[in-house]
Length: 458
Image (cartoon, rainbow, N blue to C red):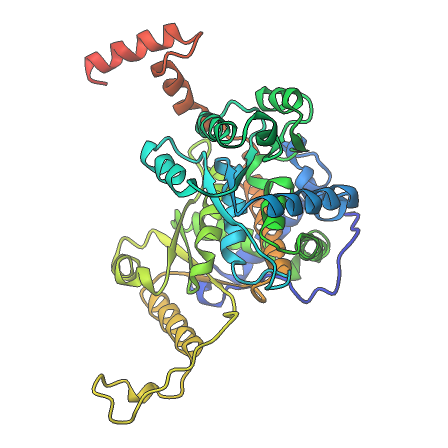
């Protein structure tokens, strides 16, 4: 049996409604899928499945030591005090989760509105010289600090950007003060960044070895940037703990994380090989970007998996809407609904020449709600299965719950596919070629082979 610890009042859980997908899957299939999902969940929690050495994320919400959380809060306060801008330097799982939370929770920090919060910018997530130069131009005249996130310290995009930013810190503030403006989140014992942080006496936080990058949002990877932004990271962990209790301890019949995993699997076997994650609130844009990495990197192996895509409605209804409605019908849609944290009333004179008088007194939230329902009906009627996920509100707790919900559904779904959802062997293919082309020492043979292939046109 699963041993469940922690959890609170179960009011802030993520909920699934599959009503608008039942034309494509039947109750008998769901029942069988739920039984299989429950078995795979047990395998996950017992640490007996593929990649079990990377399942430390399961207990992050309840095992995060108070001393570490306090250190994160203290480090964040120090960075806020000395900086008007903080650059978070990382890529993939060291970038997307933090940005997802910051974008989702922008404007709702728990700290006093009178406190000064630094701008948080991002670097190390591409090799674009134009992007980095624009960042350096923006940092001119600002008191900036850097949070660098890398388990090894050798990820090229992050390492290059960090080297340039560290050089700029030294030039601007001197070597001694530059060291006080850098926080490193890295391996606890090994790696280039670990060694640099040790030698330079940098403030460091450990990246747990049993947690992969895309599952690391609730480690210092995400928690430190959230704390810098004035967010309540304890509430975030509490929300994740509540979702953990529901996702690991609820009976299969009432377990929405398992239900989501099963619905995705059944829709996939019915011929739907693309999942379009959509929302009607722009604050969820980067949640979609993190979600794409989580599911794409976890499932896309051995010729299997659902291709994860995302869209922002109503904006993308004016570009992608036609394809969703009448295209190849190779996709299903998952709509994430969250109540708007603020509202605007629409006031209009009865004789307004723009013809909008019929909307007088309506709120934009009501309009957005009606647009969502109209879209759901249209897509369903057009043959597109639609799943609905409801996030209770825009809060730290709800974000933590959403992260944990998707992680469990992804891991269980991977096991149902018969793959290891915690590795990413295909990611190394481009790196192998890139390092050879860049003439990294030790890649001479590979470089010669690539040059030969390019000469032959393949």
